[in-house]
Image (cartoon, rainbow, N blue to C red; front, side, top):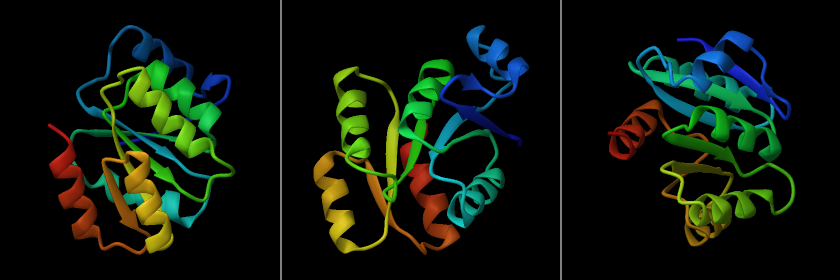
Length: 144
């Protein structure tokens, strides 16, 4: 499985963009990771790469996330709560208001962030440092 990077202007890989616009996913479920480049994002991508059927898209901002959501219609969204400001809460509200069929997993640093994310409407919240088995079980519960 290869990861696709998306910036605020759109997918970096033009062939993937054309494929997505034409509904060609080459068998798989799109998963979007919204996190700044760091070991968390890299580790999460590596763990997801072990799961059959998943196609991973990585972005580093909420603005780029919207581009990826519009282009790829991911089934699952991972969001790092270390992103700046109240952008994460706005993203969750907009996803709900626009009735996107995307499930969200927010990645929290502590119990306070976990409680906030649950109240904000996340489908699931994982505390950073979670074991791989927990990720696998969580993804299995949220995806068809």
